[in-house]
Length: 346
Ligand code: ADP
Ligand code: MG
Image (cartoon, rainbow, N blue to C red; front, side):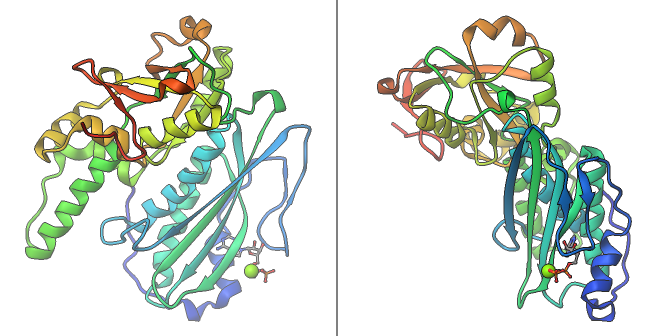
């Protein structure tokens, strides 16, 4: 986890807008030769190349996408960057730059924004992306943060959502469902804390799932790994909204159906244990949970030998003809139509 340290409160009005931007961005280093001009002019300047450019934006709103009562600002900054980098990696590209725009109410002191930017900076350093600009404004209530990521990929490497073909294998990276369950634990602790602030939560048995919620890591390693294995997915998407809706996006855009096998879905032991504790179905959580930021992709069956046995990958099903529909095959060997949120209960 990331540490928060600064307890002072300096009013934002003491710095002025330009002083604030300068204060928050002066320690960021640049690592890409494609970044010609970053923060400080009317616009950033990037050197174009013979590759294709990938651009993606996400807007996060306090109270809708994050709750600052259990999401430390440093984690929020880190996560806001991850959410965007994940989209670039899902195109099979590499991210090189980001812009960050924030709207903050006067409830936030300078130290709060320093924490936010410490998380953004850690993400930039770890993932080698350059902060090249943004915008700073005030809001009447709460915080908004919008990140745009800019990446590159050779034309022949870009992977879209619409290329999956019948018989292709469906593969996920890592394990899924943990981020959603981590959120459930944090929500529960928040309620316990509201009733009894002296109650010290014991979160030892939830460390993995809480970390997956508060400090997700985008899969920068996967485009590189696929290249090394000489595998080009036919379709790819990142798992931000839950496995079910992501599989359905690929199938709908590719005009195919699918079979996903319940017993193949990769779950961490903490996900299994915690879903039992919460009386929830772990398959349902994996299908509908969201925020895992793993990648989901399809590959021709001929590539099976190249991916099998790799600890990063799990084959969870295969693509079928569109008329066969999008189905989950349960442990009891029943076929159930997938729903954007989980599946259609019988
Ligand atoms: P303008 O008035 O031209 O919009 P700004 O004063 O908003 O310029 O921004 C000045 C510079 O600081 C620009 O390079 C802009 O991209 C950058 N910038 C503004 N806000 C942020 C922010 N929150 N994070 C990073 N860079 C920022
Ligand atoms: Mg501006």
